[in-house]
Length: 310
Length: 310
Image (cartoon, each protein chain N blue to C red):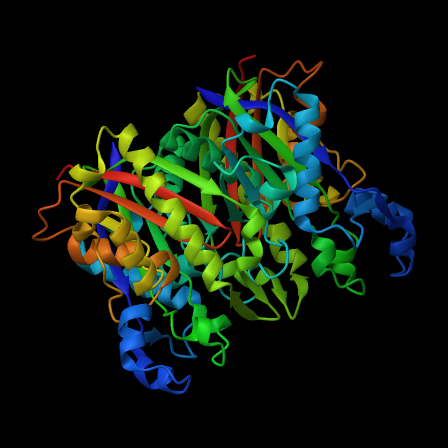
């Protein structure tokens, strides 16, 4: 049985002062803290491409796990919608070469946004099992600074750049349990790139997430034999402070187990959930289970229950 | 055990006369027949977007298999590097809505080129098994007409537009056996889009494929307990007539079981292998096994052995 053995990340050093940025839109610090959820946003250097962030996260994963050698890696899947260049070839191939992985590695990109980590976990686990592979790395990296219109208050205050790398292999610390997915392309226009700039209908996305996610988590918890009461941690996509708070509020007493942390980076798209797990689900963690839910671009959503086995 | 139950396709009605096109580059019909391999290329109408081709292929699959109802489809994976718009959102979400699939469907795009069908089969099978899903559809659709420079003799004579849809479910006709994959990002520049136009270093790609593919197929055949002699059919990516002939020649006596057919469409990227299977691996086929191999953009390659079970 394969599952999650370790998670590492790379958050670029560049920082945007979100309090100052908000002031330029006549929004005060209280707004930033309450609605956005982070006083700083991470931003990659112009010299860094998506594959560089991916490679940095993988190197951090390898440094953290010296028993995982380059030559043992058999699969590299990159979740992104903002890859290198113009998307052909795929970013995972470019990253393979930059990292120095063997040419026997299976690489592909998965195009998904904020639901991407949940989908990506089941895609890489399933692909590896179907192809008989033992060790793989799932990377999330969707640098929205490439598509940000800095004059658009709806988006420029929210998104940050990051990459994460998850080692999938045998004897995992976290086992993947039941999962559920969903897609509603009638909402495709609510989160979309046009003429190189990202546009978001924030109200539509907020309403979708605040209504859809709890029932969706309940479905998957039921399949796992758990209830909302028996969850140790809710690892939700950190879309904004406001959406995480809204879901926590709807959870009532269980809301105190909703993890809220934008890691000083902002909404890093498919990287927010693995960043939470890296911080809170390994060393020193008492969690025996967790439910994760990602939601956004597509519209697309995914929820899964994970069990601690290590 | 899930595998391939059925394959359908959609080849747009538009045709480019490749003999006439070649004449404009001072190449004669003999060159077209021997090196390119097709006298016509399919081309989508300007009004059709990638998701429209995907939806048409899925509708043809549903028409061919009335027992597969829309509401039974739980996963839709689209292999493309030329999706709708600017790639965000993913094309599979837009196709979900156009087809009318339920919102409970799991959708994502896989970014891969000519190796995409082989990878995609193991990605969808694995994802479905990991997530406990029973019926899914793998779509290939990479309309290179979007990125073609019609003044570039190296590419404009080769590529055509098509979409295919493969039903993955229980009691399959074709079971997926062993598979092997590979990636060499040091060759990323050999097939690349820059400033909206596709560029190919034909000699490098030809050399890579003619040297790499037979040993790669041998590896996977060995794992399957087969030899080059015991293969019923070689379903190779139809990159060009010349590359298919070169591999067939290297196979010696076994080369007569190499399937060669560009289906009047040209090199349709990830669609060439499923187009071959649709034509030759179902009704009336005597094949009990086949080996498939896709190779191209990345560089990336994948080979797999399939066994007839139905």
